[in-house]
Image (spheres, rainbow, N blue to C red):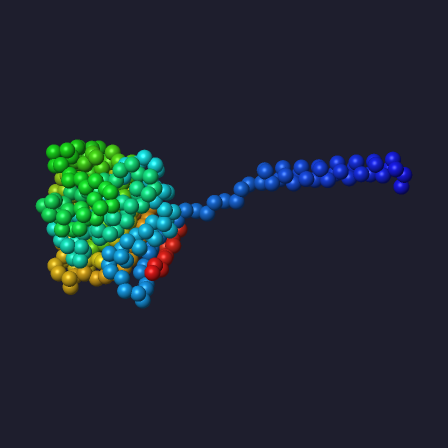
Length: 313
């Protein structure tokens, strides 16, 4: 091959190689990115360890692992948010009697909210018992304040009539400070209830309203409507201890069973269905769950969700 032919050959080869590289780069840039995995809708953390641990230690670890599995608190809390944590603090009962949410579940949620950048975390409920005694003897006030939250006693004069727009509940008094927060985290204990069969996440929203008498004319319908109004983004179910009978207050320790489970979900109906099963109830026989599903608030068959079960130790 002559020198001139060789030079021409090298020029053509270089041009061809450059064209192929450019085409490959263009294909990489224009190819669709792989789809991101769908975020989890429910995480269930169960305790399983041969090492001894207190119920409080178990509660804290299970809560943290359930929330982390769901994507972490930063999935729900943005920097500068004001968060309302809504436990069940309805009764003047000690934590061991399982009438109120476990204090360590509440403490862990507060800590994770603040770590995620929340400007403030408020904790409060509208108890059936005398509020000061319920807040103190439930253990929640001490746990919340130790974690850096503000404990709020709901001033009965501040409830404000709000348009709920529900099928059964058109208007009702709601505590404005709760709904004005950037995020409300619903965190009940799983327990028996004499009127609704079970008391879980949807039922826990009765603690944001000022007139509960009207609810008792149609508990499933009114609870469905207030749940839709609250637009839940995350709910966390405390089933470390559960109340199996004589709810909502319970009797003695014979009514309490330690299950060592905490679950978190973006689907409140599914979480209530799971909670009902934990209590030995058929979700299809629980009016609040059925009504919530019919209204499009969530899925009764929680196994259809993007779900992860965690064994914690």
